[in-house]
Length: 110
Image (cartoon, rainbow, N blue to C red; front, side):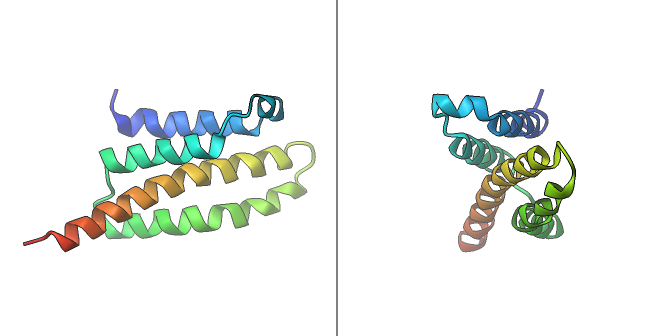
């Protein structure tokens, strides 16, 4: 199983765990874990296509703003909003690693 399959799956699972407020008593640094997982995924498999990188940047930036509207859904909207926000944190780590790889490739190109 490659990192392309398990990193997004673990990001989704960790984002769900970050939404469970009972786990906050253990002081688990969920944002740090999510950014780290996204960063490792971005370093291992960077985005090569510029359109895909642009889509990921826009998604990581705009998903939390769009998810704020999920609070209107009764009973589960708050949890969906938190989950999308946490998943966007993992996407941000992936985007930062891909941007670092892109800048490095441009600076050190022949």
